[in-house]
Length: 191
View 1 (tube, rainbow, N blue to C red):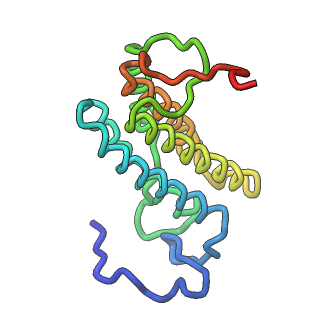
View 2: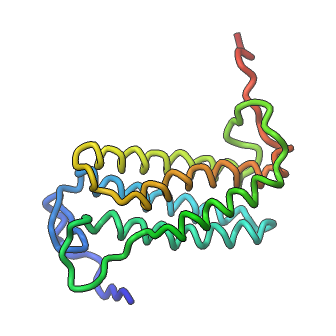
């Protein structure tokens, strides 16, 4: 259980922040940027859930994803070679597998795609597309970490964030009347 008695510490006033291990990094580091963007994704999911009232099954999926995103943030805030007094929290394959099952479950109910989909249609879909793009940014930052230091991110964490953007895309189509209310791209429409 996490206990936060005091929210500010003043330790970050110098532009640094602590990882789970206590090691301090600049707030601009790729690792901090990655878990910060995962947190941003979680905030967008919270906004999305304000618009999923008619979709209780999807809302339950999003609630699980919000918890998973905290797991992913903890994973990223704990370097793989970290020495801790406890077992570090890591994203595991069963979380990736569940996400894949939920993507398939929602996708099975969708109209076939006939064009690229523009973000919009409904408030929930627009927010899900925003979550998709923010999670893609988190993924790019995680890849940047791997390029700089191979092994800096676990394969399960990478797979999870990659599937996550797919989930948000499928979920956006699902809330758009199962794809029937999608806003489709019309190439060259405004020439």
